[in-house]
Image (tube, rainbow, N blue to C red; front, side, top):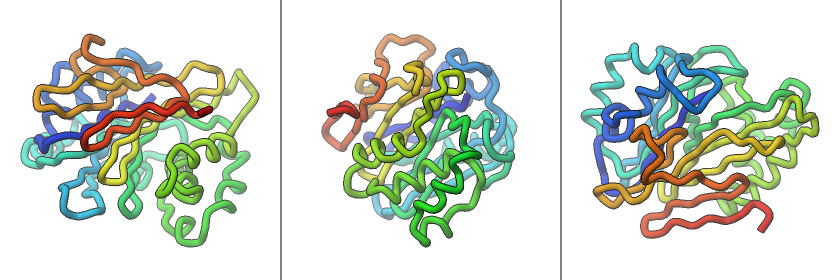
Length: 254
């Protein structure tokens, strides 16, 4: 499964999360320890906000993260107060740039780990639920991008928790042999959200750090330190929102 790392706080070089830590996202791309696959080599991407422009910058490629020298340079030179990064192990969709995460639309950016195993059976229905502007914005073929666009179509701008409730209902599956699994991290450029869910109760991992040395906080599929000390698991079916000055948890059923 894919690996995700994201950050909100005072501006830092992207490398402080993506490449430098002991168990950085780059390390996880080859040596993940809390996923079915240790290697995540089907592309990577970064979305970052500079605190001035509302829309994020976006860099994605189909190369494995460890094979792109540009990623090392980019991560060293770009500083941002908010960014999302992702390394991909594909389940649905070809290895193309359009299928690499993060996805971006307007102010929003989105990363996903997991899958909708019955996606082919419900894709047409989900597409019909998109307004024309979002339908035309779709560039790839993944279930991940469809989840993102469906969230936008169901009010992500106004109420992220309500949008999640609606989309989870739309993609629900009762076959426990083929469970829906969803861990996502997304942002509107001001807040950073993390959420995880699985229809069989075994959701993919997502950790939230304590305050880092500079006061910022991070989400990651696996602790960037390599150990869980200083990291807590985001509770399943609970939306965690990191804002500029606060952290809040809201249960899906609340």
